[in-house]
Length: 602
Image (cartoon, rainbow, N blue to C red):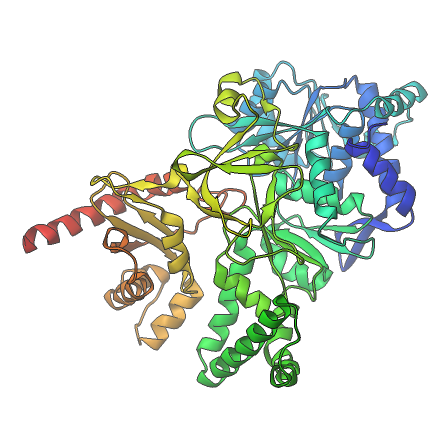
């Protein structure tokens, strides 16, 4: 057996931790818990039924569901029969399902429920290779090709199929394909990144050297399992004998953190930003609270600075820490469900002031960097090796070089095999020497830490030929909790402008302070007093920027940015092009007004 194969690693975890809890999910007022032995039995039974269905090594199988233990059971069963899971986001449209199923040549599908089955049924006639679907929940479908998974598992296991399934694990190789994960892309159809078992297990081994994860740890899976970050992290959790708690709806994560009290999780910046903004919003209304908060943050920062230098804080700081902890830090930890072994962040840059904020409270956010095409890990910070404002050092076995235009190139054991059925896109992404061209811009600092500055495709080139990286400007603006999203505009334009989506609770609080009367949010965002205050704050936050990066005007977007309306990616990054398309008329009107004002001055 090849130890670089995920199924071999899982078998070892089950052998070592059989009686320990492996998965749980909320069930009424309690939890539905499954041990490692029970997990292994479910995986083995499902694997035998997959063989009985005729699933062959290398066959692609769709996996369309929200987070739940069955997602991992199906994933691991498919891997153990050397099939290739093809995850889809629960937000996928029928057209997206059709494209991914057709492009991957999927022969089968495993779908959560009737609602998601309805994303498959309308396009099934265009998918001649798709033989059938199993569903985690009962559905109203009378299509004979659709079966409820409980019925499948209740059927007797064919001994020959079971023997074949076990033989496949014995023949498994780390070079087997473990998944095809389709990346959303900004232009054209999504492309399927082919990732091997070795790609994932090399990452797990790299993390082992920096994080002490034990069977006593528990993790919270709330990012979509269809995303490479949560998927790879779940492999790490289960191969470590830890308990994985599944959250079906990421919007309930605040409650889930408090209830589950996990010692570990991976997140995108949005969660950390929300905690940061909420705390600042709570203290801003009271000068006394604000003063106590600032004092506590100063004490915490001094203590952490000393610890980073390898020494004890001064006696004065040590004396004040318990008070600061009781008054401020404990509530920050409670909001995240207690102390943490691992608090990781990926998917998008996390602002340095947020890292410092959690650090002062005694909580290290280990920011990392990666992309689906690298399965997804490239670099990460860790308790024994971290530097704020960076995404850490490159993982063991990997290497980075900075190419033309500052583009980051990465080479390592976890780089994808290529894009499925797309040799031209593969050749454009990976050169003959194995370097993956990430499309991200950055540099390696003097201490060997990687810094990301922007995406090449996001760089704004003004009509005057000035190159402007929007992300750092947006980071400055988002430091104010009043702003929920900020999108800098200006490509092929003479100057840069801004589209902001404010936090509505913060906006209402501002209106009360300014004594602006309103009946709904639409009135608020059109109020001259409110808009003037937003402009004043943006000007103050960006006043030290060079003239070509100064914001010349802004408009307020009332519509929420979500995955469902296409304005956010699954890792909650803003989709710039979609935002520009959605608000095109507002943006055009803004530029026309600014030009008109400039024309009058001239």
